[in-house]
Length: 232
View 1 (cartoon, rainbow, N blue to C red):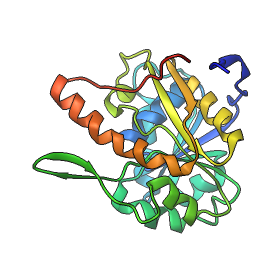
View 2 (cartoon, rainbow, N blue to C red):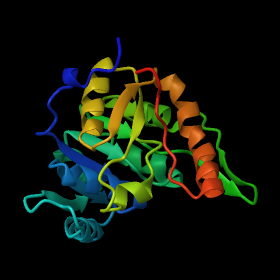
View 3 (tube, rainbow, N blue to C red):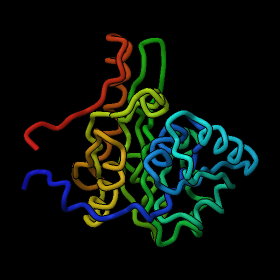
């Protein structure tokens, strides 16, 4: 069946926590979700840094007066959130997630990390023993509901208050089909976005790796390229 936004669940009451919310991708997602009216928690190893980041985001243009965005240490954010987005650098991915296994039990976890390396020839995909970043997360979080999404969303576009719409599709990989609706509905809170089911976790590797191609496209054409799936 074709994409039908009317079937998406109501996620407006969910609290979205972002682990790595002080980085570019995390800050951008936090801004967009808070701007859309979602309750957002910024997570960092330093509660003070998280609070400072939350205050900076809350002061950005376009933020509604009643926006709810606060910061706390990662552990607290994991415990208080309904949905947690992992947006940490790849080199700290495993350690950060492993430390949060207990507070993330039973929680929806969305991994948007791309395992990439960089050399003189540009970005390239790294080999992950588990298969992909999200499969590593799933192995470390056996009691959480895990999916991959938001891997290809441009951080500069997310953070730009003058950009009202971000017209792209968010590819979602998961073993839990119910998560497709929840995460798709969260994506739809950002004008222009759609969440599209793209297969099981084993299919996430090529999605994560494709970000290297997008970086090359952006560099060549001075753009902020995204993905749009046709015929849906």
